[in-house]
Length: 422
Image 1 (cartoon, one colour):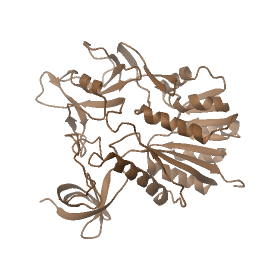
Image 2 (image 1 turned 180 degrees about the vertical axis):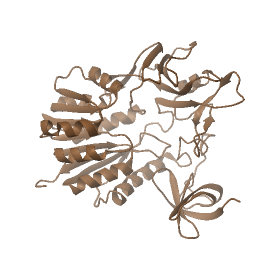
Image 3 (image 1 turned 60 degrees about the vertical axis):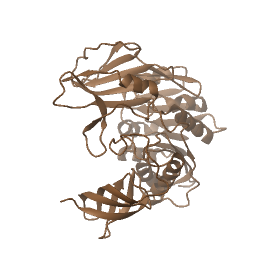
Image 4 (image 1 turned 135 degrees about the horizontal axis):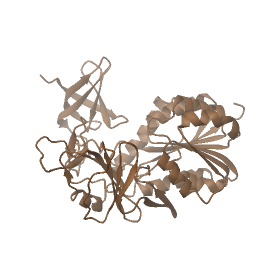
């Protein structure tokens, strides 16, 4: 028999859930409800100190609740906040960044944390990944979809509101044969309006493809090769008047207007500076490097993805003051600390897991004057900033950017400076 309880919810927590208290005093985390709401919930995970559940029925709704425009909301795992207006989403994300920095990072006397919103709250993504829907009854073709909110099962969808119309139109025309070895299909839309389909599969050989559409196509095989199946072999993105060539398997920001605002913010933090000795970690295809290079006497970059390193070399070909190391930051950085001292500035944009322990220690050993940390996860950001603050760095500036409207994700750019004498 289901464990049902009536709960009054108190506050949002990072990750998309809302926190309430069970009758026994334990915290319970439930998605798709809002502070102030009372709901009947079903417990689906019970631990000694907390529980997780799902809302079965709402008894008291928040005045901030709105009708989500997407019919898949709360079933699909992609969005967390469609039941909340966009202005409220921005305020929530700003508050959650502060909460993570104060509670997990043990940082006090934080400066004001402004947030830059996205010009469009829907249709902003230039990249999306679909999964084939596994079906035992499909005989000729299968549909595509996203992972469900509550499991790894794939939910078939006809339209996603986070991508532009032209990508949804293409989605409706893709047919995948039943029994195909394709495991994932990415759809990418560049600044020139070109759409590329990137197929991933279990086979070393590409699938047979019939293209009656004006799109490019690439296959990423199980052995790591990228095979062009037709059309362009790279994407073209324009950021603040600069052109970036990006390989199909390379990462690039999914919301270009917000990415431009992030670059402008980083440059604003460095206004009037020049001839800097700069280290950039997790440099990717060179998005930030392209704009930092003119400020640098020397720029050293580290990136682990081979395709991104290839793109980086092409995108920054005009500069002669750059060194690029291909490999994991935690492996490369400890080896080069001595040769790149002294360093004025470190810019890092790590994955969601934040800094590896060895990488963080090497960065502390390098002891740069300033650190600009670009984060896509406030919790791991807070953890890393705590270490830096304990080793002589002071928080100077925090700014949040809503790269991913309707979701719980938020980008944060932080500037820390070394305290003299430490």
